[in-house]
Amino acid sequence: MCGIAGFVDLVGGRELAVDRLDAMVEAMFDRGPDGRGTSRQAGVALGMRRLSIIDLAGGQQPIENEDGRIRVVMNGELYNHEALQRELEAAGHRFRSRSDTEVLVHGYEEWGIDGLLARLNGMFAFALQDERRETVFLARDRLGIKPLLYAERDGWLLFGSSHDALLASGLVEAELDFDAVELYLLLQYVPGTYSPLRSVQRLAPGHLLEVRGGQARTPRAWWSLPSQSLDDAAAASASERRSDEDLVAEARELLADAVRMHMVSDVEVGVFLSGGLDSTLILGLMREATDNTIRAYSIGFEDQRVFDESAHARAAAERFGATYVPQLFTAQEVLAQVDVLTRVLDEPIGDAACLPTLLLSELARRDLKVVLSGEGADELFAGYGYYQDLPPRDPGFVRNFDRGDDPGFFARAFKGAKRGTMTVQRSFHGKSAISGFPYAMSPDFIAELVRRDTARGVDAGARIAQLEAQWQGSSTSPLQRALRVDASSWLPDDLLMKVDRTTMAHSLEARVPFLDWRVANFAFSLPARLKLSGTTGKAILRRAFAPLLGERFEKREKHGFNLPMHAWMRNELRDRVHARLVDACPNWLDRPCVAALLEAHHSGRASLERSLWSLFVLVSWHERARERVRAAALVGGAA
Image 1 (cartoon, rainbow, N blue to C red):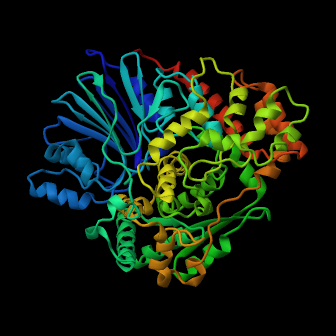
Image 2: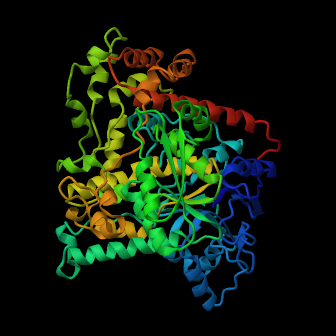
Image 3: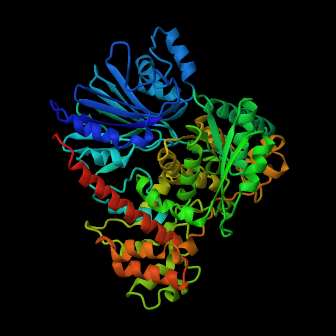
């Protein structure tokens, strides 16, 4: 696990000043405090920070092949690296370490880039340089567990695990991409290949970017989620029909093997434990895989307004003989993390659950470097309640927003606000995506709120409709389409980004066994009845692991971290949010619109904590990005 960064000369004959690469690497210190490494060869620079997990003594990067002409830096872990190393050694390759990263250079030599990627099981983002072919490959894992960003500036292709790394280069400005900003305000996260910065792009999950001969090619997909399930006639030939009993048995085998593989480590592996179905199942499978001590980390809250699962977590730890490590937090301790959070988030994420995840990461890092976590089960196996009532509709974002549950709701909430605000705001109440994921604002209100410095193209509603049409695939099953939308956006761009940023802020590696690609393939092949049974989600998991879990955990409904943001915005956070959003309102936001939002929430006429928290995080993040640019201007050297 680490952070990676670097650049490629797209013009030829140039070298970027070494202190710029060093600045990019040091900007990711928290991602890898155990070491650093750099390489500068043939117009390509590679850098990394290391959090040592596998081969503690010999895994320094960059890592080269036998003749030193192929080199790589990687962020992540390859869980099947031992089997691949044995296969490559049998083919004549000589390894210098036990590092999982070294598999990449020899595997590329033996199988080519596509053959290599097809064999990898893990979470990763890597940059591989083939000096002989004057080619650099940037690749990201199938489900988007690890981030990878890139930008073309002044004849350089820059890349890194974080926006901070790119900003530290001194070549990337903190100019906002207002298309991305509007999508963020709609969703509370930035989706797809967008970045909140105008010059930066994300490499999409399961995609590969090739730079050859000074030319960066269009990224291409090397893997994608299955589109059709056994509910689709085209995928349900007689040879593919299997009994439910066979599918349940396969679920048991796949998940047990995924957890075993995710425990491969030269350091202790713990678990984030909420006491819900997903984390309890992971703990149970960990116990089946090892007799060693397993530390299970859980947090609770003294504030009675917060749903507290710590009693369930304790019971789960006792059931499986884990060492239970809890901590109870007051509201003041949680709120003290707000300023920390806005510093460590590398991009705006308006999900308030970032706060408890940050606290949980700090707790676990006191003892160890690696934890398993339950992300992905809901998006693969239909765990959210909103999947229960999916209409068989086409992408209908604009139509959804045109319907108003209560046309007068926001007219009343914004009585006396600036002209237009009270009419455009009324339409977003309770609206949602194809999947049922609730949007935070209407496109019309966002258009009034954001003062763009560029000509407006299509609005946020039309853009997200286009993205959803791509994500939902060709399935005839409404549930399959909904799951694909969430697994293509909400999962990698919010949940996994949240986990990556908050755990890495404390130099902690979080692994997600439900997102083993074999499990994902299997889940998306299942018929809907094995995911959603009546009003019960994750049906196949409950059925497959009922004996392991016991009735208490097998029947548990889903609960999340439901922080009392509604009340905090009116009380404890009120002055801080007002100072950031109104007193120091940036010139790209319409101040009267922001003031109207605050006044409506504070007066009790509306509950707008999602919108206000998202705005607060966005503005705080952007100010920090601008500080990064100012600091980078002090870096010596020149391109």
